[in-house]
Amino acid sequence: MLWSLTKIILFVVIVSLLTLGAGYLLEAEGGVRIAFGGMEFNLGPLQSVVGALLLVLAIWILMKVVGFLVAILRFINGDETAISRYFDRSRERKGFKALSDGMLALASGEGREAMKKADQADKYLNRPELTNLITAQAAEMIGDKKTADRVYKELLKDQRTRFVGVRGLMKQRMSEGNNEVALKLAETAFAIKPKHEETQDLLLRLQAESGDWKGARKTLATKLKTGTLPRDVHKRRDAVLALSEAKVVIDDNATIEAREEAIEANRLSPDLIPAAAMAARGYIAKGKPKYATRVIRKAWNVSPHPDLAEVFAEIQPNETPAQRIKRFGLLTNSHQDHPETKMLLAELNIAAEDFPAARRAMGDLAQTDPNTRTLTLMAAIERGEGAEDAVVRGWLARAVTAPRGPSWICDSCNHIHGDWVPVCENCGGFDTLTWRKPPAQMMSTTGLNAEMLPLIVGSPREEANALVPTTTEPAADADVVVEEAQVVDAATKDETAK
Image (cartoon, rainbow, N blue to C red):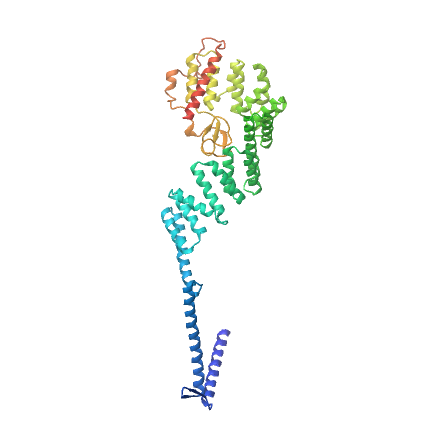
């Protein structure tokens, strides 16, 4: 309110002063006399003031006209002027509008429209670092790889867009299946931006696929340093790479280095079953069975696995079945309720021809967890106890159509592998294999009808109505059981491959 009052008072004062000044000019005598070309003009005081103001206005207008004419001449000459800046601003507005329309078209999946708008934006803006990227991505969207390649190569010329160009070419080569060139481009992109997480992952994947384990371990170390990988995950994956490197060394027959790498992998991640198996074999080759036993026991206590049992048997290959059962107590005494422990104990007793003990070891596993392996073991037990051939064939028939059981399965694509590998053979995922049961849709191993097959080849003996065997002596043809089990296993693998 005070400010409004102040403005009113100031306005009244200014008007009063102007009125007073005009009064003085009217009352004043004399004036201004102007003589020009034989003519004379006499101006009074007030007229002189008005004339001076008009003269100042005329001079200002003249200066503006002269400036405008000079600007036109400079514009025609190609110099930067207010006129050129006006047109530049107009072109810039049109260019950025075309650029934004191109980005929206690209996000909407309209590749050809995005390329058209990018062309318009390039004409108006002359900013290839902005428009080329839209053009390249739009070309990829519509399948115009030739244009995309050309634009990405243009991006390589500018230091600011070099990384984008290398990354785009890398993805192009990967989509073409040219992983050798893609690997070199990934290494270049990694050198430009080592902290870029996507580039780190792609480089690691390509190095693993190409078997460059040393390079992959360096990339993995960089991921740890830059904070893009948790320390525990780094520890396991470094163990996976160390194990893979050891396998390569074994292929080259440099066994000492291979054993050391495998032992290092086991030290980094003791629960990595393939690493534990390789480390144990390394100790066996060095004549250190105690160390091998310790490695296997440590891994078995984490997770019982048939690969561990296989290596444990290699420690004393010439022992008798009874001695083996006793020595394997180091493993079977832990995780006694684990299915793997039960099946291992059953296999040991079958080898010792103690079939009642094998049946006790199996318990109700064939009913609670029926799979190819458990049902094949039951067939062997029945054969060993002298059951009729129809009963044995019944168990084998169920084994053929039963779930495969735990296998090395990729967590990304559910592809089943016969042996552990660091990179999935199907999807190329790194460190994605886990030992688990197949998904429900992959449980059946054959296309045979599981209900009709027992009617053709026989039925397994049920516990309540056991068939009376023709002889109580153990079957002498134990090799036949092994042969039949191998046939079942081969059929399972064939169907899984299909």
